[in-house]
Picture 1 (cartoon, helix red, strand yellow):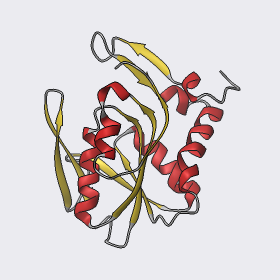
Picture 2: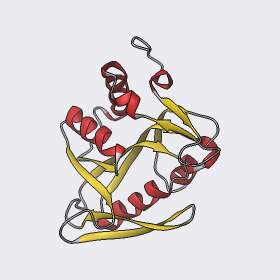
Picture 3: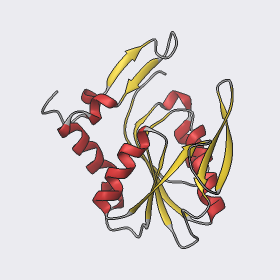
Length: 179
């Protein structure tokens, strides 16, 4: 595991979490490995090096770890999109569907401006609901989305296709079959 260049080798699978039948893809083992983390950040930002991007926007919570690292490497500002009630001040809000109910994502209403060109970063795309809410918030602010980058895609859950259907180019480093 120490010298692998395959990111899947750094991602732990935890069976039956958070409920029976789910195979949880735990990227914290990737984050804790210096080589794996460096490879992931480098591969996430590579397609965007040299593009005109002004901010990296990341989705709560593991996306913050990646988004901050990508923003730093690209020399850009970082903007968090958080769950409801976590940001002080005036915010834009977007509700989205969960498996059983709804949740809300928020963005400071002054975090982005119309001239911003942003890259969305998160650890994993499953059903795409959180990213969809983030896209709507960014678009409501008037900023342009250059792309969305994820370490893991779970193709059977359809999130990547949902995001692409919103006219957002998606870059994924690896995928896992199953939930």
